[in-house]
Length: 347
Image (cartoon, rainbow, N blue to C red):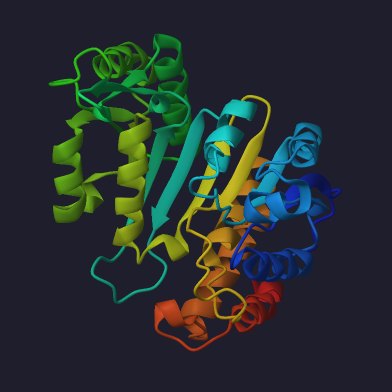
């Protein structure tokens, strides 16, 4: 039986988000309360809820809260299309220098297309093609005749994310890091990433193996033989795509947590969308946000609580068979939360 956590509660910003966000947030907060209330929440708004409350999808009060706590858990945030607003998630990453995106993909429910998946995607979060230096060139009356975009990868940014991936592998007992690139074609933009990897990797010799893959070969091998991978580290666009592909191996984004890590702040999230079609029905799966809370516990040094949380989740899912509709069950959002809470004392 797990003991009570005796450490003090840690201040953190909580952003429930849009659509199903408030529902899954309630479930996750209830579970964390039962786990010993490791966080003291400052609740703030973002996305559509931020526009409604403050006229901005990323209000100043929300940013101020994260600057103060340097730690946040957030539900899905919607950036309005055509409203002149930049992506909320991109703005958060840039504002707080959240250079590392961590996306674990671990099998939780047996019987899917793949069994025993356990890999981690480490994605560079603020460089690459997502800097979005874009413009159009008009030709013969067509204002959008040519679209041009420039990507930016730096030696320093590449080194920072590569070191993060290798350090993560060492800390978590991982055996191999695979560096994914497209240096055969994008010889400068992703060549610098591979070149820097060849400088960084030898420092970890004897502790972590490493290899490299061209991104299209990696995508194919993730489908054919995902067990060959352990930790994958890559640039921004490739990481965005491959992390969703990896989530598909374990049943979809409903079980995919994400962590955005910087030198001075960290934001943890459910990476799925706001699912407005099922919002308010009480049937959303809170698992992605719950697992993100587990990553958050690890980040602040509460590994025993994170381990208890994962054990309780596994026993609720696979011991008790309590699953939401997307996993083939009939449990409501709070049914699942209550099942996890019942399992916590023995975890």
